[in-house]
Image (cartoon, rainbow, N blue to C red):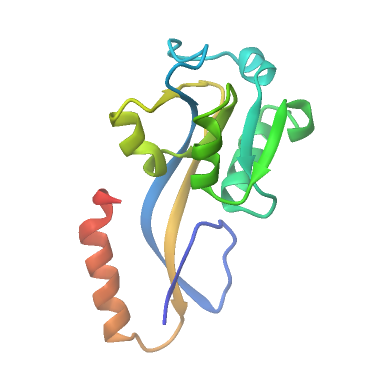
Length: 157
């Protein structure tokens, strides 16, 4: 039995196997007033409306850690809404002039299709790592086979 986690916290009774790195990015819809900008300063970023994942999500945790490195609290931003999934954020952003913070993997297709634009905020470093977890002890051949399969196809995610 195994799981996939993004948390940095480590439990001594679990074995962690690196799976992949991911990056959170700032996105806007095509046609957004900022869609022609390649990057934003932190002041520009803070001045615009923002839609984020809900409290307790790993995505929000990574974003808040990036902010804390800059001595910025979430309450100092113009957060319009917290939503429960990345898909709901993308749907909301299609119809507003807000910005969102999502996994680059979750929006790659829409960026290629021109529906969303990634805008760099150089001050924000928002990387995270996903790992497989399993209990220490004897390995499970089925779990090992699944992890090999996932590793082989991870770049398609």
